[in-house]
Image 1 (cartoon, helix red, strand yellow):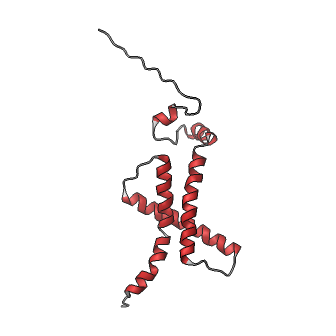
Image 2 (spheres, helix red, strand yellow; image 1 turned 30 degrees about the vertical axis):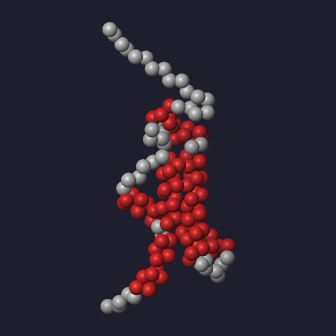
Image 3 (cartoon, one colour; image 1 turned 90 degrees about the horizontal axis):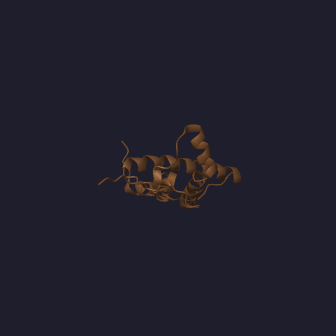
Length: 138
C-alpha cells in the first residue's frame, strides 16, 4: 500500500479546485441574478462539479485547437474557467430574459421560467395597474 505524502495532497489542491470553483462561481452568480435561494449543499456541490467539468473541458478543447502542443499553467486555467463561469452566468441570464424565449417557452410547454407570479404579471417597461375589488358588506 502506497502512503501519500501531505505535499502530494497539497500539490493536487489546485486541480481539485479547478473542478469546483468555476461551477460554484457560475451558480452563485446565476442564483443571485435570478433571486433563487439555494439552500441545499448537495445542490451546490453536485452542480458546481458538473458545470466546472463542462467549462474546463471546453477551455481545454479550445486551448488544444488554438495552440496545439501547449498546456496552460494550472492557475491560469482556473482563472480563465472562473471568468468564463462568471460571464456565462450573465449571458444565460440575459438569454432567459428575452421576450422571444419566454414566448416560445409559453407556446411550447405552456409554462414560464419565473418562479414568482408577480414577475409574470407585472410589466416593468410599460407599467402595470392592479385593481383590487373588495367585497365588503356591513
